[in-house]
Amino acid sequence: MEKPKRLSLNLASESLRNRRFYFLLLGVLLASLLVVSFFAGTLFFKYRTKAETTHASLVKIEQLINIAQREEKEFETKSREASKQNKDKVDLVNGIILRKSFSWIEFLSRLESSLPDTSYIVSLAPTLTEDSRIELRFKVVSQNLNDLLGLINNLNALKFKQIRFLSESKNESGQILSEISLSYERNI
Image (cartoon, rainbow, N blue to C red; front, side, top):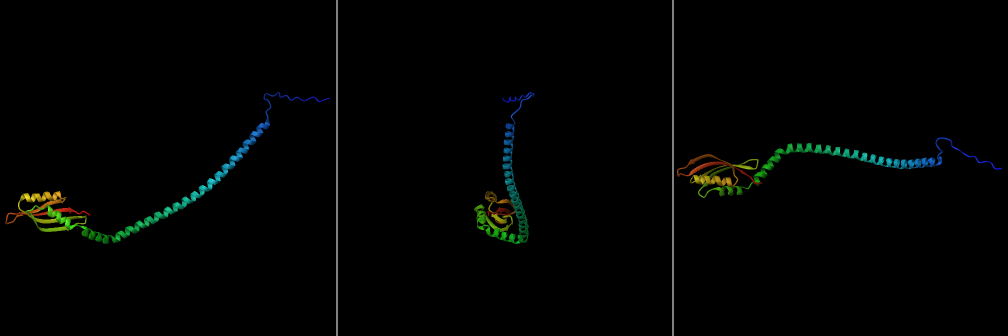
């Protein structure tokens, strides 16, 4: 006789579940977690070493920048000291260059072109200034007041500045003798 088969009845409120599926699902999740952890760890160490090398190179760059800034400050102080020591020599040489570069021909031709035909210069006293100007005092003889006003207008048109009358008198022949001062800007 055959043995009667046992019947398994679950009288509980919940039915039995297949545990193998859950164990398989748990195993797959753990395996994927291990794989993801492995790749995350390798990426972490890879980028950590890159970050360390980058940090080390940044430290070296900062040191080089500090060295360059110190050298720049040293150079600036040396250049200031050299400019203080050589200021007199440089000013002397610059003054000589300015005097040599001044075009006396252009200046005198402008002054001559401003004179009316009947007027003439009796004396001329130029003074070179350090700011590329020439201060001029001169005496001019004019036949009449219109010639003198024409001279002033011509001087203004030729860009002479600070024109002033210092003195004015008539000589024995009735001509007007005027002393004038003016300023002329050099073209360098």
